[in-house]
Image (tube, rainbow, N blue to C red; front, side):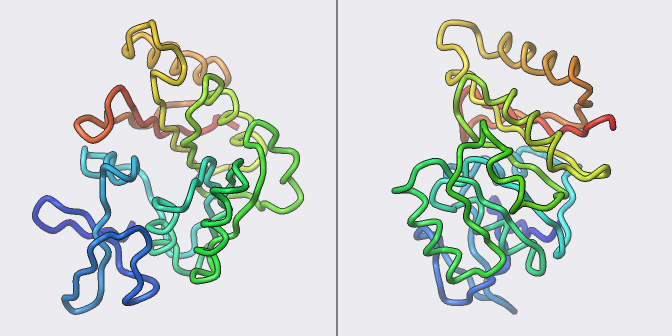
Length: 213
């Protein structure tokens, strides 16, 4: 996966030179790069905290659940230059910004839909190499598994960003994480790697998983 580490920063090569997506710093060396802010992107936080086994090629296909305005989506767009990102967002207001981003970056396909109902976009999303889930709600693990079962290639993986406080505000995060891992294992998923997101995100963990087909 083509990401660049410089000092304490992480960056991606800018697919659209001279254009900043969310106010991030652009740096010019031999080519132009976009600083990837780990406080604005859980994937950047995970990579800086040691996530190693996620592989993305320039032709990879990605299903992104919870795309929001496209901050992290835009950096994945830099990486999968010749691939495709199916970016699912539930909010019509937020999706407008995502649509504007897709006009600058043709490898992004915005989808206004509910990630808990993946069959509604079954006819427009192909099998993907990565399913990335950042949907902060109590059923995030269940909706992630639904999408994995429908859209993940046999050799594909999923990356689930779990926000403990979105699942239960009373229980300790450590207990919540264990419960979600148990749910995944009971449904035939294997956890390849896990990484905490502190200090960038409190009470979050990223789980890289694969499906035992």
